[in-house]
Image (tube, rainbow, N blue to C red; front, top):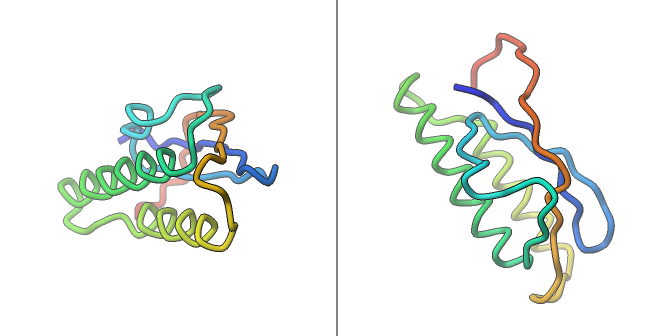
Length: 103
């Protein structure tokens, strides 16, 4: 299952490196594209939940890293005081380096 790192820029300019255990994220987000923050959160939540379920189908347990990434994004969104019209930029998507670890 190809892991993917994706880098985003929050509306306040902060850049964050994110992780997905599955390339399914590329069905929801595209590098070089901006998303209204509410749309971004829905897309990221759905993609990472689906990625975790794919891990569960293969390894018998959900992916703690994907679940943790969703929580981290939700926490940042909740504490960022961003307007609903704010935009998140997906800056880059790239295959994650293989570490041999499984989540």
